[in-house]
Image (cartoon, rainbow over all chains, first blue to last red):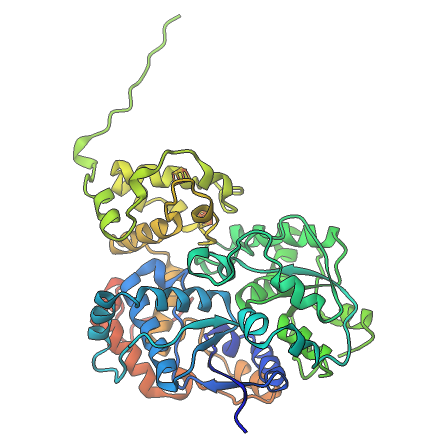
Length: 298
Length: 186
Ligand code: SF4
Ligand code: SF4
């Protein structure tokens, strides 16, 4: 039988090529929620909004259009896990609604075998969970509540620019807090909770000191709030917090040890998957203290 | 006591009077309504720890200080977080304005080597962050995934499609890409 919720699954770059634990976890939790992830064969970089869009908007738009065209060929809306990919794809869908822009971009696509029509939309995992699946259906899959204090990091591009987002709010956004608390955990308030992780805009690749300084400020606030882990919904934020935490400790002489989990990894644990199945042994900052707290081990 | 007031002389030949108009034409139609309130600067997480002043970048662009703004390294410390855009009382899309200026900066050849490296990877593999070491495939297999994802990595034809797009938009020329002559370092 066909799953109730079907999406074109957009992977991007960082998830499949650097953080496959997030891909693995998501592929495991999806069927429990009656979600089918349909592959977008031959999808490329979204391309990244902070870098490629910074260099040449037209190239960015044409490559986004090709990715969106792949989803149109599947006949299914796009599901993304990364706030950056989300930012690119949602802006792409928006920009390509304009018939003139679409015609111009389709000219560039000529020869690739793809054309864009404007028939699909893009949804972030958080939106799919909260709006399409719904809290009740998620709750039904939970067999092992997670009792832990979590610092939630939402990430900028899930919410901004707000005029082309589905939420209706920019501040006091509680969707991720609700999704985390649904699993039995507590969302702990901390200073600068809404602040950027510092990875975007090409900073992580070219201005690392500024980029890490932002993450450092967040780690300090989270440590002061005595959290057991950090939960995010963007793999680029995840990379910044997990890999970046090791770099921050080296650069600033600190010793932050905050385990970093992507939401589907936390959800998977609550659904009864093992830490290993959720790829928690593949992290840069040990997840062990968090697992100990909730009575598990890798 | 005497003191001399040096007037800052703006040399007319250095002013690009078209820049603001070009921004308006590119869709930044509200840019001229900037009241220099500084809300964007106040909202900026990068400006809090660097010399970058968002308001100043906008001001310089509006005044037509083209060379000064395009060569300014501060243009590249914006994380594109979008907070300024949300808070601007004149509803100016400040983040898009910065991206627009960055596009122009690249056209003038102001591009970080790291950013060029990311672009080279995109051209050569279709991924800005590709699998460039066996360890990543091994990690995928450990997790029960296919060694290569079902992206451009599994479809050589798809990489050709990306290269086709890049040739058409001239992105290869923009980043001064020469086939087979890139160190590939990022
Ligand atoms: S917040 Fe808007 S109006 Fe105020 S200085 Fe910045 S761009 Fe200008
Ligand atoms: S988008 Fe850039 S300039 Fe605007 S607040 Fe964020 S970092 Fe600062």
